[in-house]
Image 1: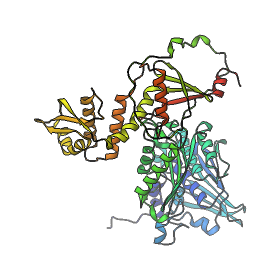
Image 2 (image 1 turned 90 degrees about the horizontal axis):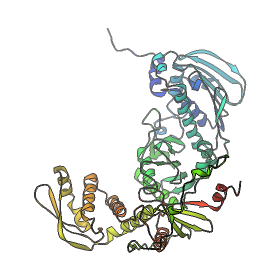
Image 3 (image 1 turned 45 degrees about the vertical axis):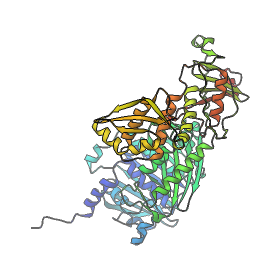
Image 4 (image 1 turned 180 degrees about the vertical axis):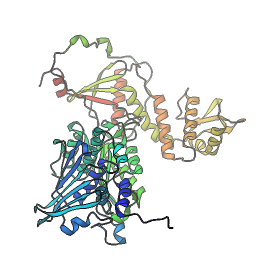
Length: 567
């Protein structure tokens, strides 16, 4: 007797639903994408109990006639693919013809649709056609999904809480609105409006709706193109960050995609502008010929493969860095003063905390920067607070400069240019011997040419040890051994994935930290002026190499608000 049987369509649709319909947001995704593909200008999503009880999507798209309305629930029924060649030129969000039959197999679905003539209403429950009738002629589609997973209790049991389901649905609708600013989206849960956009094709207005005014006013417009790609969207100021990468939102031809290489390229473009453990808010749409991308690699269609990924990464990096470099990035202090009596006894800043230091602790270490870029306005130091923060002013307001972070930025850019170009070396009176583990020794020995190219004279010295007899002149005096150890750590860390540019940058970061003025180190007004002059000449004067701010400002208006001179 034959053991292998052909599954009936209802059973196979239930199995397919396990891939296509994982939770409530999966249903919302498929229905909203169908509405977008139908050229809708208004899409309304209504939920009951976060979609667990009911999901209703109403659009003003092209709609369907009676025959299409019934066929839409057949497996692999699609209007988007006619032949095999179409699979490699997909310009719609949906295309497989699996979504509606999969959804209908695990819920009750009521479809009302019309092309503008006589409308059709179809009811399907558990994959079976229950009813088909005529309805009103309103152009567009209304599709209602009730009691998801009612016939698969194991899947119903594994749905998250109503709050968790609502959170992911809200996030998805946010993303769709960002991808389609020309479409008006509205989201309701239990009759309460949660989200609404006007469809005015203004992406910044949608960003404001999603993230709020404080974020939207600190976004930088970005546009770039090459022979293959067109990029358009917004990136946040470096001070506007999130603790995870979920807010780096990328679309390819309007499709929300998750591609680790793209996310990494975008985040890496902010290197030294922000802390490494923070991520920017980014909304970018990438337009590319459909034949250069493959979206047919996962049921969710969010994973994507590019034909020319390196060209895209390079374009992203160059355009983001260019946008950041030409934008004044001095953070302003937020002065939301609560309407209450100020407790003056809580203010404990004493005059001793602010000093005007006319004496030199030691001779200033001058670092020549030849870049003439002057984005930071002319400012004039008037004192030092806490031995750390330079207080400066001009006609626009007051500025606080972190002397260590500022000096670190200056030295970082100096070493970034100095290390590759200066080959002068200095012999050591007493050679330095460094002992390594066996693994470290093998890795360093394999990459010994890196040290030699930098100007080090280094030899093997016994088992697992190296002796250094000379070093490049840019190595800081009295910190030779510590600096060499750090360089060896870098070599061990990169192992075989050596990237000279990245390595030189790490050297610059290491050297700049050691050379810089420390916190609680008093400097004179002349030294403050010199520091500010050099900072203004930097390519990126706004952050230290680790991404921390070098300077913040209080505008005259913000100061007057603090002292209630203006309301």
